[in-house]
Amino acid sequence: MRHGLIPELLADAAWQSGDVEVVSGQVRYTYAEAWERVVRLARSMKQIGIHKGTVVGVLDVNSHRYFELQYALGLVGAVVHTLNFRLPLADLAFTVQHARDEVLFVWDGFRPLGEALRRFVRGVVWMPEAGSAPPAAATAEAALAVAGETRPADVSEWPDYESLIQSQPAGAAPPPVELQDTDAYSVFYTTGTTGRPKGMIYRHRDMMLAPLQIAHHLAIHDTGAALRAGDTIMPLIPFFHIHGWGTPFFAPYLGNKLVLPERADAAAQLALIRAEQVTWSNMVPTQLAMLLDALADGPSPDATVAQLRLKVLTGGSPLPSGLAKRAHRAGVAFSLIYGGSDQLGAAISAVRQPMSDEALRVQSLSTTVQPLPMVRMRVCDTTGHDVPRDGATVGELWVQSPWLPSGYLDNPAASQAAYQDGWFHSGDLAVWLPDGSFQVVDRVKDAVKSGGEWIATSVVEAVLSEIPGVALAAVIPVPDERWGERPLAILQAGEDLQEETVRAHLDSAVASGVIARFWVPDRIQRVAEIPLTSAGKVHKAALRAQYTP
Image: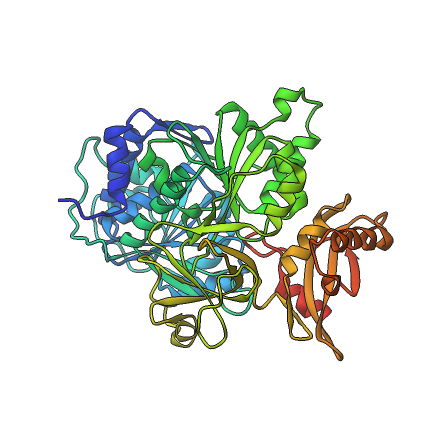
């Protein structure tokens, strides 16, 4: 019987697209072979005490191991805890304890983190690189555990990952587990930039619906990141971040080849794109910038090699117009996704990428987004009433969908503040357009309220990003006696960048009507490096703490 469960996606891919490849480091196999490995892994999981409801933390890069685990854990009814290895250790340990993890699966590259966290769980499964020797834990005692023998309570290591798979016979049936689509599938935590990370439970139904609606939206609309049959997908969004925006689920659903970059840096990612003929990827803007930097730093390529011919879905933070132009010139087409862990994606830009630099600038400064299928959005004032659909009145964006989490795990105060009457209060400022689409202009906490008027910092940052020599731009509010708040611009740039150059560029943007005169920052601060969050976004909380008296 079919229940709409995550493992059914890979089972179907094994049947319908069985010869399509999954590529990960030295490993190359098909969806049919992946399903076989997942079933064997799930059977061993049950024998070592991983059952329905067991919370299992995963520490790994985007690899075939992580891909398999997201299906094998779902097959036994366990709850996948996607551990964010970029969090500070104190926050990471908090999430392990708060989610009540019982078992950790840890890639050997994260062994120090795994060792630090093992005291909080009852078992650790180490995951060596393909072809490397197994860790010392995979001893005869561990083999007995796989065979179903009783284990002492103080034993903290189990067989290594590959041993769990190989200990089961080929062709075995999946373990019998009673599951419904409303059962918990995974637990995810925010990055914790404004306090302790907040957790959310995603059900099988949620992680089935949301990623597939992203795929459907990208197939319906003729946008830069249009997703088609035959595309080769390489997710650069880490699987710990909302399951890589659903890529491990919609790739097999569509029968697309999947390339997993593991720990590849930007130069290695470029090599993978070319070697495996990758046509579609997802990444935050900072990752896109690094990819384009690697392209520029490579050997003098001819015009054909210099063009990536890559479709990119980007989001997580605004796409600066300067970066948008660089991507366009390198042959990268793009769409922007709006959403987050609290709402599992809500909208995607649905305007075809324009071909002129000036049109590209206008679009990237005010990206028009269309809600995904089955998503409702509103822009509300402080009283909870809809603002006019005039494209000018700013309000807070509210979101509603069938896969919206019901609240934060064991955090009633935060849940009550954000989730009200079935609507998620996003904390984002937006305007509502006459055709029913939206333009997201800033975060409430990041926007500047100067003299009672909003200044959209993301738009000012986009203008600043166009200045040659500016690698990264951030605009934050600072207190002002006269106006309440005024914008401060912080630029990651070399010492040769002069303030006069910045002022002249801002004046040009004012003259052309891109920004208002009162949006121009009073102060400009040049720095060697702007801090980033674990998700690769500008760490504005850290900047506010540093520059606000």
